Length: 257
Length: 218
Image (tube, rainbow over all chains, first blue to last red; front, side, top):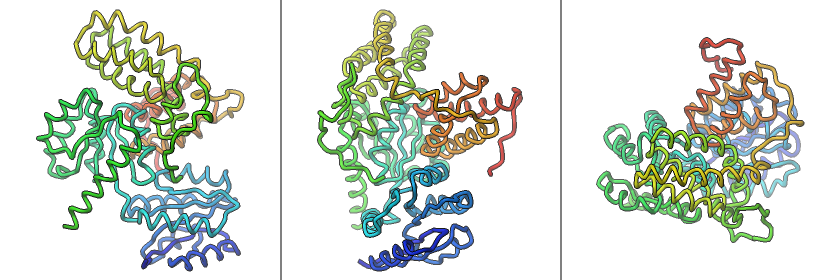
């Protein structure tokens, strides 16, 4: 496979381990550069960045600005972040970078071939442009957290606990799919979908309802609003994941035709 | 972390929790780690949800009550509290039928069963007081600002990280009650409430009740 990505290894120290890591990444077909955790140095990397690989070290206080920069780049351009460090170093980084941007943590001591394989597998499987963004809207925090847990390894999952918050998110963001609870207080799923469909900015965002069995008849009545379908909340997690995967697969097939 | 593929649940390796069909809960949640986290969130909300349901019933807000018990029907099933889930389902059906009278008859005993789960779930939702450190107002305010900004930015991981750090501190008396509410609201992803509570807690830490400008980004 032609790998046109550069892996940016961000590390204060550039000893044997780092150089060995760089070599292994190059062997795996990537371009790899080592930069200090400095915004100016990181931003100078003029290449198609496949991932940031942050190598933790003792003095992490200098890392803050660099982490903020990488976090912003990662969110904007879908660049996955991998972190290597001790348990404590990983905790510090977790406090500064949203968890959904960090694809995997590797606690020291690391096995370089295994680390390179994990990074390679991730990029091959999901790519930097394949992480679809899913907005999940449900008034139940438990349901929101569960759905996030099921989907976040393949997708970027954003949560909103009400129709109002969903509309607020949609005003400035464009998800690839909305999973929308049908039954919510104040503004229910049907009303939220009506609002989405009447806004020219995001009228064509695909929406799949999340509903319990009892609501099925009601859901059928609003098919005229063109949701992509519905999922039953009683479904097993594997089935929900599979249905979401299948939706994006169908979408990809339609685009290729 | 890359999630493990969901596999068949090995029931013998699961904890035994009185009143819960743990295997069912783990199967539904998609893994033991998610399930355990869910138990903690469920515990944190028991009192708040009980109060909400009682209030809805007293105020004849049947639609809101129905929505609450509908959600609790689902979350109770998620943790494996199958009988409780069925009881909430009965209340949901009464709510759909707008049967205020029977709701008034049935709700108290369901809430009693719901409250009884606090005992078994407490280890999953509480912190060890002895291990807490004392935090100064500036540190706590910084964490609350981080949480507010994360919630405003739809970053739940950031909210959870800030919450985890807040939980390592012993709260000053002036915000202890609000911290209880914040805990429940974060568990419930009650976004606007989280933002509001963070603001209120910062005000109290400031030492006065007038509105204060949003602190600048670091």
